[in-house]
Image (cartoon, rainbow, N blue to C red; front, side):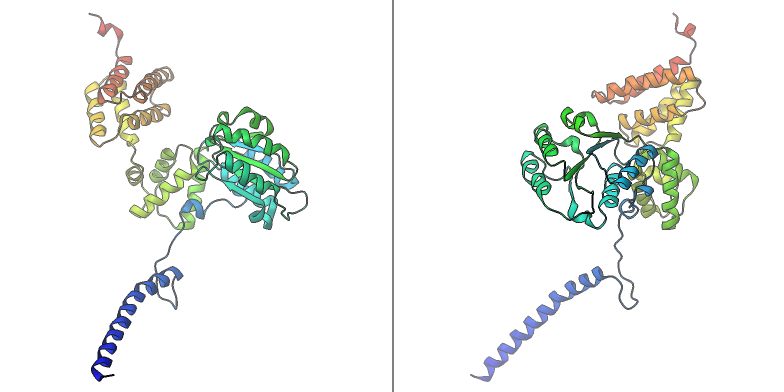
Length: 369
């Protein structure tokens, strides 16, 4: 072959080699990032959400609902686990409690002995007939006196047909498998399943319980905060621990300091101080001042539902109102909330509410013509 041909091949090979080097460089850097810091060099760290990082691992760590948790501890100790339904609001520890119980009951056999189906999974009649039935029939080595556990999270979103198919499966395989259902509303579970299960109801977490957990996380994560910030977190969470921890992490990531102002910016709720000013103006019968504050909130982009819900929550704990007046205020706010939910969420609706609240504090003689 002529030399010129060799020269052409060499150029082409060198170009290909250069191209491969360029392609390999980003892959090498991305794998180095994933592996984390090596030989002392700083690399990007990927952190878990705090909700997962500080998720309780045992029943002793679960916050709130002490009496119900004590019952679960007895079940974990004795090993005699019935079918049961845990119902309650989101973010109060239903799913976490079931997982903690399963870990304590099965120990190392947890991976083999637990089937979890969430609302995001396919849970029609076919899944109940095939997947759940196959798991119930499967032979698994577990500690003596223990059973396999099927966890059905968000069970109230299962179709009635799937729930009907579950009835017989629960009975046939009850000697080897137990069913644990978590739901927001137990009345969405069909009666035949309810009658086969022990029903445990979880209540909303108290403010003191949420505050204690937030302080623990702040200490472990070295979060800087002030009292207003923690009060705002508890106020915005409404008894939902998951919401409180997420808001804490979001505020700290965004601002580096947890203050009341920054929490309300992250949560995007009307500031309670402005809502308190509206209610004070209504107590004095000063409609102009109340409307000025209402317009301020409306121009910030808050919906009528946001404003009326915050008004209700502020009025409920507002110490400057006498008890009788507070009840009348709550009644009026409730009626307005109902109309807003029916679709009439205009500023005129809210202005009408403020007018009625002002009228409650003005002498009736002034309205006589």
